[in-house]
Image (cartoon, rainbow, N blue to C red; front, side, top):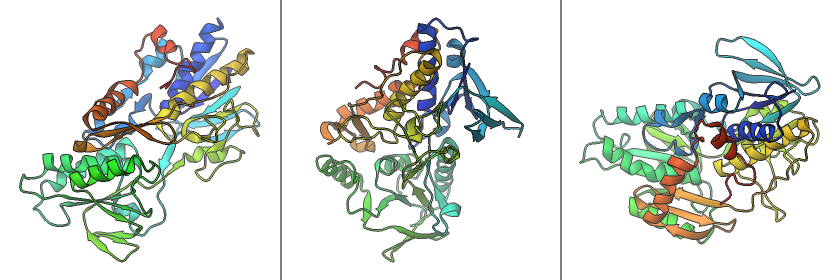
Amino acid sequence: MRLVIVGAGFAGMYAALSAARLRDIEGVSPEELEIALVSPEPTLVIRPRLYEPSPETLTAPLQNVFDAVDVAYVQGSVEAVDTKAGTVEVVNAEGERKTLQYHRLVLATGSRLFRPNISGLAEYAFSIDNVDDAIALDRHLHELAKMPASAARDTIVVAGAGFTGIEAATEMPSRLRTLFDKTANPRVIIIDRSSAVAPDMGEGARPIIEDALRRLGVETRLNAGVSSLDKSGVTLSTGEHIETMTVIWAAGMRANPVTTKIPGERDKFDRLLVDGCLRVPSVPGVFATGDAARAACDDCGNYALMSCQHATRMGAFAGNNAAAELLGVPPRQYHQKAYVTCLDLGDAGALFTRGWDREVEMVGEKAKATKQEINTVWIYPPKPERAAALASADPERVTDL
């Protein structure tokens, strides 16, 4: 039997570890149940940190972890899925193709930044969606530092006032002060179509975020969208033109297009709708997890978000349940009632909230210390030691906050 997991992000990593854990508990050998993970590289990208400097350092190796728990790594990308035949077509970096048979499939393909058809967006905007994009932005900022001061050089525009946009914007003043001459006066502006920053963070958290933006000198342009970009800067839907050499696009996500290869119902973000065990109901043998799935967290109408916090736990349940079906043991109902957010606010500290109503629990330096622990310890892979790696993937304990 073979269980194939597509994707080596947080959901994919924990799906593999959790499946291996159940296989170990049931006393089944790797030869009897092969667990294969497909991804372009055996590497976990620490995506929640890509707003930071030195993004080239923000990855973690997974091959030694996979070896420790007998998970087979398959290098490549999945370009086709035949759910009737139970196969995936994998293409590696050299363009070589091979077909991989599966008995159960877990889609943990993550998400991508949504880039609408806006004039100049593809040519002139930067992002922190993946390592390559974040490195390109970092190099661009270093190149700006070599140029003479000007309004265009010293202005950074961030399109999107959600979680990612706020972290990118609030980190930018300190990054620019480090790179630019001490006499420089950098300007950071957030643009969003909403009437308030952090529209999903709630009334309790928003004043703290707004105060942090004021303290950092970050400007906002609300009720405004991006109409076009060109070499001279960005033009807003209000008609305002902002002279800038740096626009960071952080406005919305969509599930990886691999989800469209599965004949299942999807939501507006292209996430596959799944049942309580993270199965795609219309396709036998296929599970979806992490940013590829729209899953209910509880019985109160809350659904998993496109976040590392949800992806890790969803991955553990999906991997466990896919293996459980093959091993003839009962699956576990996915549930994730605990929900926290920890928003980095640059030199203004951080903001920690708990619950779906975003009740503020910590602010300032105390929250910043928690954010740094999350970013540098909690979200990294377990040690490549068999017992520790398998224990880390107990579905009931993963991201149990």
